[in-house]
Image (cartoon, rainbow, N blue to C red; front, side, top):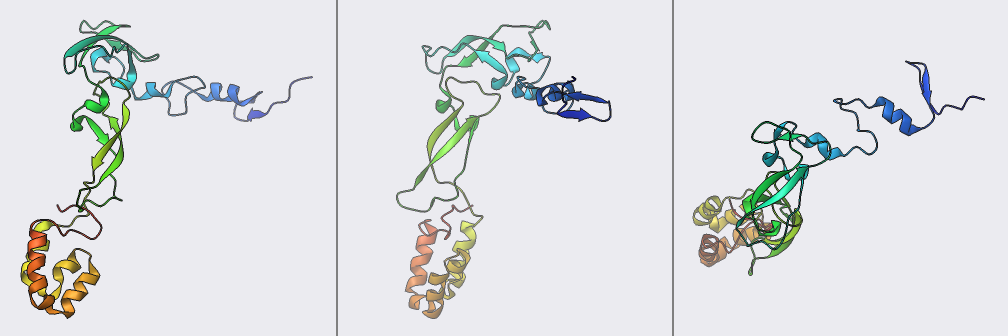
Length: 225
């Protein structure tokens, strides 16, 4: 008795016993469909035929040793990942190559060489200035030792689009009517200044000084731009 087919292809008149056979049949190299089971997804983001030394870090495997001298250029032996093809300076395909990098862990890199999640929930205008735990990822073309994703404690540095020059100008010219506080989103203080005529001028003068030195900032806790 013929086996019962679970998936049938009406366009070709054939069927498959299980989903794995179906996926193997559908997949074709170079198309946009999902790769078959067991095929690594990273190969689809790796260049093919380029120089091995210029491969992104996720496209190669290196025998990084942690006993090198900090910040000193050190050579390590690397190889492209399975399914990734690269060539050397001579144009011939290589399975092993030498990569020279600065000896430092990923969390020791310059801030321009990694990207961190910028928190918009912590107060930037506070004393002392607050910090937050950020998850950082190294850029693809940067090579380093250790984990490429790490945690860092950073200062709150996001902005809501408020300008320091605008708030200071409003404080000097229309501060007696609370325009500076209204602009910064501090409605209660703005109403207080409005109905007290800027605290008879005293509150207005104090706000000019506080905004001028950056002590009073946007109500959402962001930085000036």
